[in-house]
Amino acid sequence: MSSQTVLVDRKSGIAIVTLNRPEVLNALSPQMAQELRNAMYELEADKAVRCIVMKGAGRGFMAGGDVAGFNENMDNLQVHVGNMLDDFHCATRAIVRMAKPVIGALHGPVAGAGMSLAMTPDLAIAADNLMMTLAYANLGTSPDGGSTYFLPRIVGRRKAFEIAMLSDRFDAAEAERLGLVNKVVPADQLDAAVMEWAERLANGPSYAFGWTKKLIDQSFNSDIDRQLEEERAGIVACAGSADMQEGIRAFVGKRKAAFKGE
Image (cartoon, rainbow, N blue to C red; front, top):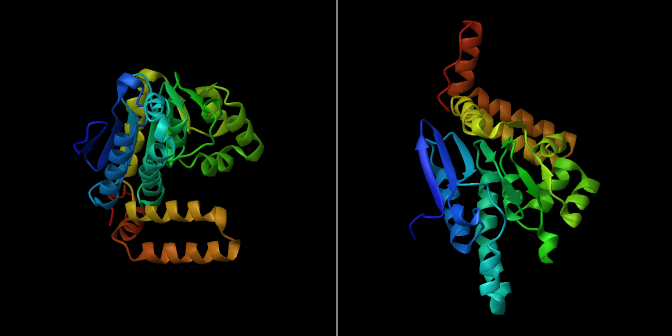
């Protein structure tokens, strides 16, 4: 299947993944779920890619699942939804699992599966025209896409219940206050702000970033003894990397480190 609903552009160690169904606000379809899964698997394995940016084409990041498609498959809805989520959830796992940073560039409507996907990257920058809602309750369904995993970890249990069950909309300022995005910028500065971070990360110590991502993610299910053991394993592993040796030499030499991601 040719990639039509998900576009991937690589340059200078950065891969830009664009959700590309702008005519329907990038609503998640079975084809998009499959292409997103395939793109993330490919980028996870691509050693030349050191940072990934996720964005949406057109007026918004993603306005949720393709409800029109649900309606067309009403007689077989359980199979239709289940098959689509198999691919979508594989993409989610790949984003979390991969040992490289992922940044979400969020703008316009970010609803339902779009909000779930927006919580998956390690970092997120939002345009000031962002409008978020989890929205699943409006369709009479429970959430998917990892939202019930990420949301309480970001905003806390009580607030997660409010966002999930009441499905109210909130703007970029509230998303930043809740910790759902790292910062908010004017809409016409979103791409520049995201690429600034992406370039910094792509030129950073990629091996160390992989360990950092693993350590932070596993800390929620770890006790202090296990976490300290894993931190020791991480820094010992990094001590054998070219990047840490370069970092030490640069520090001693009072110059900027030139990391190669090794």
